[in-house]
Length: 427
Image 1 (cartoon, rainbow, N blue to C red):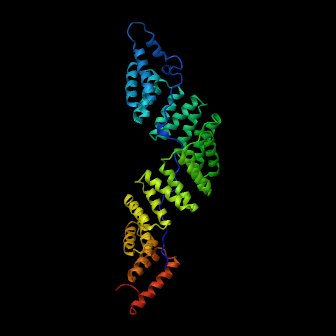
Image 2: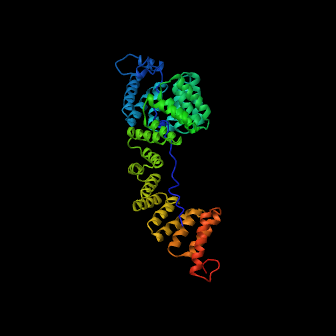
Image 3: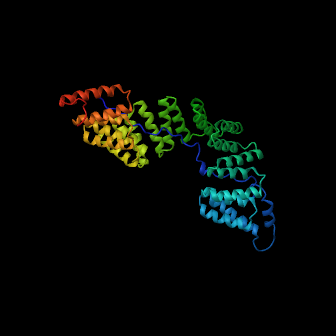
C-alpha cells in the first residue's frame, strides 16, 4: 500500500513586494518655500523679518528655528527637528512654510494623526497650492484612508495637471480601492509626463501583475530596472516570470534581487520555490536555510526548509524542522501531517500515528490523513483500527479507488487473522 503523502502543501504563494516603501516616502516640500532658500519668503514672514532694530525679530527667530529644523530633519534627527519646527511655528503660526515643516517631521516620525491635523490646517491657510493637497493625500494614504487620499490627489492634479508623481500616487490609492483600470490610466499619465521615472513603471508593472497580465508586467519591470535597478523590481519580475513558467529566468532574477538586498528573507524563500520546480534541491536547501537564518520565527520559512530536507531524504533534519514549524503555527495541521509522513519513512510508526492524530484534531475531514493513519496502524498490526480509518477516509472521499483496494487488502488480512470475523471491525 502507498501512503497519501501530499507533501508540504499549505505554503503561501510567492508574495509581491510593495512597489515602493510608501510609509517612509518624504512629503514634498512646498514650491517657493522661502526658508528653503529657493525664492523670497512668504509675505507674512517677510513682513516680520523687515523690522529693524538691534534685537532679533520674531521673523528672524522663526527663520533660525526653521532652518535648524530642516537641517536636523535631513540628518534624521527627527525628535530634535520637531522641537525646532514647533518653536518656529509658535513664532509664525500662519506661515505655510513653517506649518508645512511641522507636518513633514510628524510624517517622517510616522505620527500620522498629528501630521493629518497639520495638513488640514495647511489646507485652510493655503488652499490653492497643489503641494498642500498632495501632502495631505500622502498622510491620508499612510492612514489607509484611501478614498479621502484620492480626493486630495485629484485636487492637487486639478491645481497642477502636470505633476507626474501626484498621478502616480493617485494610481496607487485607486489600486488600493479596487479600481485597477482607473489606476492604470493614472500610471500611464505619470509615464507620459515623466517617461524616465523608474517608480512610475514599477507601479504600472505591479498593477498589471495584479490583473494577471504578466507578459505586460514583465516588460514594465524590465523598463523600471533599465531606468533604476532595484530589489523590489527584480523580486516582482522574478515572481511574474515564475507565474509564466519561465523558471530559469525567474531564478536568475531572484539571485539578482538577493545581490541587491542580501538580507531579504522573502527573496531567498521565493527563490527556493523556483529551485524546487527546477529540481535544484541542494541550492534550494541553501536558500531555505538563508531565509530561516534571517527570520527564524517565520512559519513559512521553517516549513519550506523541512520540505527541502525531506526531498533530499534527510529525514531527521526534516522532522526537526517540521516540529519547529508546528510549534510556530500550532493551529496549522500541515506540519503535523508532513511530520507524520517523515516519521513513517523512518519506520517510526508509533510517532507517526501520534502526529496524524494531532493533525486530525486540527482538520478531521482530511481523507488522506485518515488513509495514512490507517497505513501506519496496519504496519503495527492494529488492523481493526486501520480499517476504521480507511472507512472514514472513504466516507470523506468515496471516489478514491486506490484506497478502496487497500481497504479490501486490509480486510483480507484481518479475516485471515480472525476467521470468525465477518465485518472486519473490532469487537
